[in-house]
Length: 537
Image (cartoon, rainbow, N blue to C red):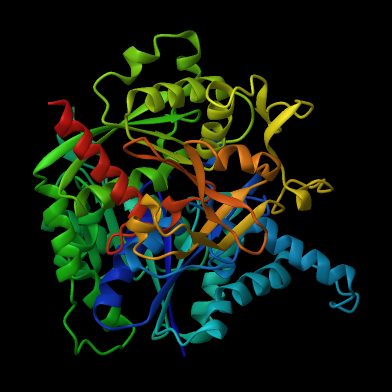
């Protein structure tokens, strides 16, 4: 039966529980163990699909169509495996399930309470992955911070799991912050002590402390934490700030985190971790032979996490091309007031990002017009592809009032329109075209050359699509559809035939880019940017 590792956080949010969980999982996987990770989020939303990107960051989408927390992106990028609906659970989903059971009479008239009904549902979800595959270890990350009211049912469920299965099958890791007071020139352990105290009051004794810190932790501090937090001294792990998140697995290897976990779970350590591919990636990442500047035209640039997977996909594509990719965020609304040429100056490529709603659309159209006319490499994702279709219709095909139905629901020439199966949809949550769909590529296209095949599958998240009433006009032009979903006829990819690199895709390729498998479209885009820069010099 699978062993369970629970990762909680204390002192403050945004310490990097997802990165620590992913790094541990990578080390265990590198030792030949079958590992997966799941995220339990304490917010009451059913999923992050209806959350504002400024509020939550990007909404990650899995092959099976689940809208999930962005940490699942880290899990997939580190482990090079696909997650599913079962890997992300929210309090809203937990309560929804319990209430549905109550309505159906499953509790036989009993009073429904947090304990045992909510905690039983949480435990059931924590063990659900055991039914899907024969995992050796399941790592469960609990969102939020210990001490939050919202997290209490999850901590209680962990307490019950440890009590039921014993320490040899369950292990608790607590990630905390050791702040440095510059005035006193000291690292302070008191916040960690109080965080562990909160956890102990809930009945959970952490087995391992992982301490985020800006400065090295001395043996004296480790002894102090061990004494006051009731944790073995060799189980107090230093997590120094790293220059890149991809350094963290090697830092945790140096701290022997994987060995400590295996010892406590009474698992064999016969195989040494094989991290050669990971080290090769880091070597290329840290020793680039060239660099390019890419403009990211979006409408949520104030929060980098809104485009987290795009930024990481550029890291992967840069490494495989031995190139440093400098991403310059450009707010699409800023392009609506003119001076587009100044904003685009010294850029070797432009990516127009996904998004929703009409705000900033005209700025995206201006950016696309500029790169199309100037021959700058262009990559459009989802809304970015749709904007490319609209811009070409207006400025090349002569369809002066061409629009997207998302922006102009009553517009006359809707070259982008609402999908037929979306027309009667009233509820917003979980109702878009979601998940992986197949696509057939034109054999002669740049896209097929990048993929090395004409049959692909990519993840989607959209309600609007290319309007096939205009298909003939585009087929007879320079902007041609080169990727089609054969089941529905949906245009998935467009390319500009006479442009050095101009590709728009309806799907989200950034969601499938991984450390050991960079996405081919990002890799080919960066390669085109390198070529463009070379020709400009």
